[in-house]
Image (cartoon, rainbow, N blue to C red):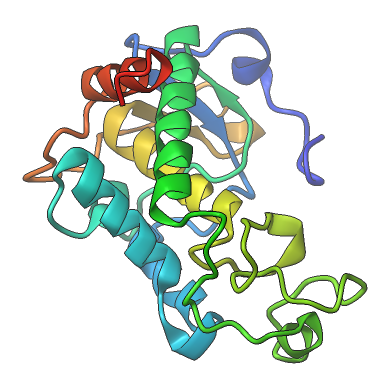
Amino acid sequence: SLKGRPVPCDLLRRAPGASSARSVVYWGPDAGAEGTSLRTHQRYVAKRQPRGQDLMRATIDRFFKEVFRFDGDASACADARDGDPALPWSNYFLAPPEIWEELAKFDLVASAWLDAAYPRDGASGGGCPATYATLHANGVLARPDVESECRYCRARHWTNWHRCRVGCHRCWSYVLEQLNVIYFRALTDLVYVHDEDACGAGRRWPRAATERRGDFEPAFVARVYEGLIGGGG
């Protein structure tokens, strides 16, 4: 099992049950709260960030604006309403190989942008405290037994999820996790299987309707990726 979840049912063991080349089947029951949009999740996370600022949302919105000419709230691409399934957070997934290749290219583009937008040789202006002890006392840090100097977002390099309970714009794995949720929700056909009882009939979830999405499409991601790999920049 993964993170204490039961082994997926036969639908996920044998076949994706996909109705299209863009179908992604994912498994509950602990994917997250049903009917909770990414924006709602971001509002909750912001309460635990420095000065209550939603640093991750600001980073993601900047990424979408600068890369995809998406001038708006990127979290709208991962909308959810009452009665909708949980968003596709860390989970069991089944998808065609092409989807995983697309997602890998998207993550490389995002990682390259993060390094360029927030250089590793420059200190962050995120306003984090200087020491891990302060972060832990504030309930933000998951582990107190780490180095004394804060490497949450003040230090001149990126940190990872195991160092902080709630991330900021320097906690790159949290940023990429939200970006992947957006990609799945906006650009694939999701099929949610809640539990064994629902194994034979996954809930098909139409893509989030987003106006003015700019260049946020798999073909554009692929072109940017090829430019980066080929040195075209």
